[in-house]
Length: 110
Image 1 (cartoon, rainbow, N blue to C red):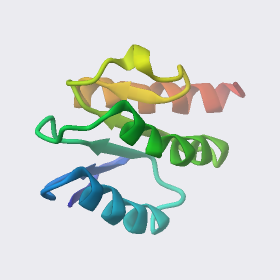
Image 2: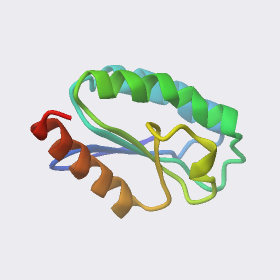
Image 3: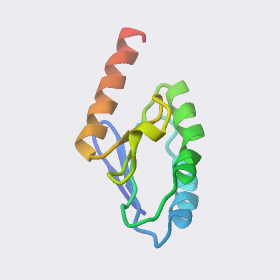
């Protein structure tokens, strides 16, 4: 797992050999960052199912409730397979845009 602290978010990238190994490592790391916006970049090389991506839904919901953002970057999945409140983008730039838009929404009281 690679971790990069940026100005407005923490980028966590998978470098493990399997999705399960990444997910387990991520759960430990995420607990250390309760007040940070998080973007995770999941390798397209993992053969990940929609059900596996949905493992992140609870975390995404908790992050939103705590006033932070959570976005997954993966270009191999269909974003229409997920709830609208679950942020999945194909590129890092779009993920950064989501973080920025959600920060504006919070400032405006939405």
